[in-house]
Image (cartoon, rainbow, N blue to C red; front, side, top):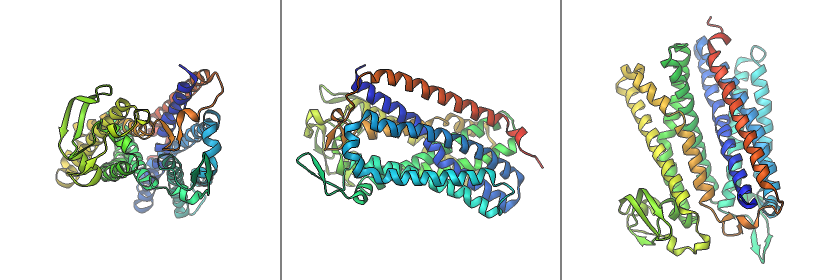
Length: 436
């Protein structure tokens, strides 16, 4: 493994771990706030117990997210110094604001965790809401910075110089809205199905059924809402990408030939040398509609992109297929659950329904990882789309490969610790909280 590949692998590894911690840390406070609100309105002690249990999980993921996020900020400077030298002054504003949001979140979480029986009950609840809002703001701001890499704005690039810098324009670039909406919904779906699945598993095991049922209902509602809205976000994102990054869309669909009435490809094995796709199911005109809202519109293929500027088609295509496939499966579960709530409430206690949610525990996070692979690998070979190549931004420092091995060990250890802590929390639910 050479140093360039090692630097990319280390960044990918760090992002891959951090995004899971960040997703849960962004969305769990809202689950917690809903359970807390239900306790305040109904007086049902079970909702208070659910709130306290989830607040402990929020604290765990806040700590791990802070650690992994701090590592990422150092890696940007250490692994990609040429990138940060030019990009830092342009897209630094969202990172600065993200730091502010992080401090607000930390203060609010401290108030929330230690505020039981010390604050006015509604003020205490509001501090929990602030934890969620500030965490969500942090995520949106980081996504805005990433969106700038996909849609650079807020400067003039003249003779290799970055001039007339406008940080506001850079932050609110053309990609930030579609990426932010898609990420928020992905976070909602992934966390919702994971949390609902864990509580469904506890119900199947017959442990603290009332507690886990109420927790399951809240998490499942978030999962269902997110899963139903996500396809609309996906359509918005696809049309945006078709306009700004046609090479990325072409790689996603393994669309090698520019043509009208372009077919949407489901599955298939891309052959980049022969520029064909084998064993794919094709839906005529569907890609044209997805990209432009018109079944007959022309869609740019990879044949219009210089080979040196093309993303690695196979990786992007497979990641996109995984993301879509899992998204469709979770959408089907969401629609089934809605139907059951509407017409077949007697099915809510069926074991097969709970097993569906248990099976879906990893689905959302696998889809998130696949989606970020599409976003990041699909931009290659550019670190700043159309401006700076990834190869020109990497550190000249030798020996990065050893750093990669060290960080792999750190992140694997961190993940094991988090899993053990969460497992301990779930097992201790019945002992930690009063039943009165």
